[in-house]
Image 1 (cartoon, one colour):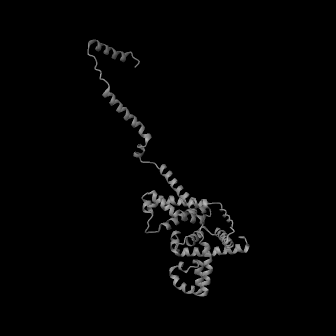
Image 2 (cartoon, helix red, strand yellow):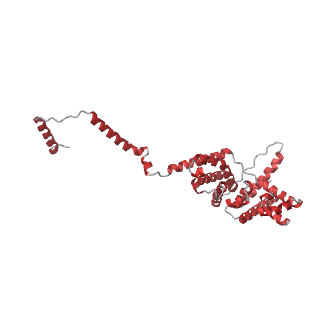
Image 3 (cartoon, rainbow over the protein chains, first blue to last red):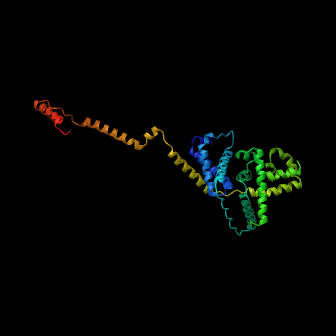
Length: 176
Length: 142
């Protein structure tokens, strides 16, 4: 990161190669639109380049800083937009030996995606950082600029809401 | 820690006690070792595994985004105004200076190689040159 602060493009390329997938998947989990997620990932790294000098490794890890930039951009976009993205179509199941198990797993995943769409942006962010990215509660709270208590509360509510949405969809049979 | 507290913590933090807040882990491990505790964790663990599924990001997609960032940076840097000494050193600004320098060099060279003609000092030449000067001064279109 110190080399990026010194305006070395080679170092910046390495940084992007290492962290761009991370930025894209967190953005995609929140905005649920791959094209918009790509825009957010690119904008996030432009900000990293522009503000590299202000990054202090003693205050936070680079990934925490990057997550914070990505989350702010994603929340900003979802707050402004007037449409809801379409859910991605489920893939065609293959006929391999694990086809039935894969079908069940795909179905569960699709159900979960639909339930995730019902959450608020912040709740999706909490789930993305803690469960998907595997951050500790403390790290995820820092990336979201929340206190530990507020993060715990958001996480608990997000998981409860997910379970409730899944249960409702199962009752209605809307996932079948 | 009671079983209810344990359940509430599991509903919030999931089925892996090691990811729970540090102060709760010690007591939680004891309950996790019991049959009821294990059942609670198993139930939450199923949800954890589903939530841990990440959207697939292909390497080409990430590389394309990185390339676009570099292109945007290059275009931003081109648009930024340059300091005056940099602007002066760009080639269109150097054309007048270069042509002036060429003219000076050509003049110096011609002065060195061209034969210097001394004006004649005989009487006829003097009269003729005076007449030329007056002709230019009083009647010429120049």
